[in-house]
Length: 310
Image 1 (cartoon, one colour):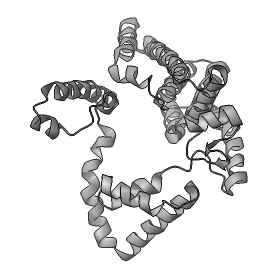
Image 2 (spheres, rainbow, N blue to C red):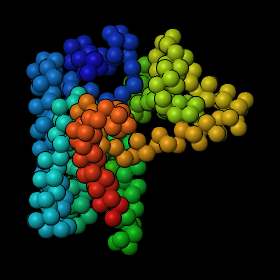
Image 3 (tube, helix red, strand yellow):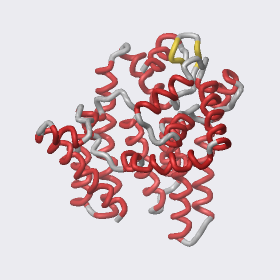
Image 4 (cartoon, rainbow, N blue to C red):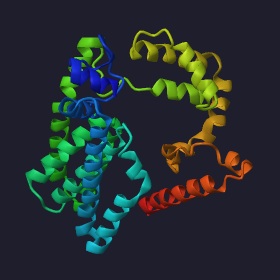
């Protein structure tokens, strides 16, 4: 949000005026900046735009499944997206999830149109959605490997999938190259997407998990860093020291952190409704209403994960 405000008002990609940053991939801040340019720094306007993106996502889901499973299944999928409480709640959050899901489902919809015999238009549309999605959340970068790899295997021919992959790469470069050039000019490093928070995450895992005490200790280490690059350098230096000087202790500390991992993969997302404490606390308080709500939110997410695997 502060990056978007500085973009809209001062044409600066920064958290603080005069201090450039690359701590966030540019897709979502630029969307917010566009909203703020048009409507002022108004969160309600941003939420309205995200509600529209959420509605279009439901349409994309319908269009993805209609040729695959028929109208009834497609309608069920679209309605599930429209009614899912977590997806509804996320449209009101100033976070990148709603934009990212919109771009990912749009990319998948257009890719399938191309896969089913479409020409250059659906391929280019899918590539644009992919590029914008990657510039929003870089986790999407590996998607073409699976999409076009599967296309080559299933169709038993590689020329068309290879051509499609090249189109994806070229359109991604159209967005990445100017951003990387800007970062190289500002920081001396051609950061492709975001300076990220990988070292912080790894450091807390190696210390036994992302507990509040471990996160606070890491924050104290980087309190004096002038930017995210210096911050990451400090954390990487500590990581190197731990692995070099305390390899056995670090290894067992990493093992002890493994119980945190499922939280990143299987969640009720109930925290966005303010239900973010451990179940044991709700049981001790006999707060059965909040516990039941958290469980009800967990069930559809668990079902969706099982369905995705199936």
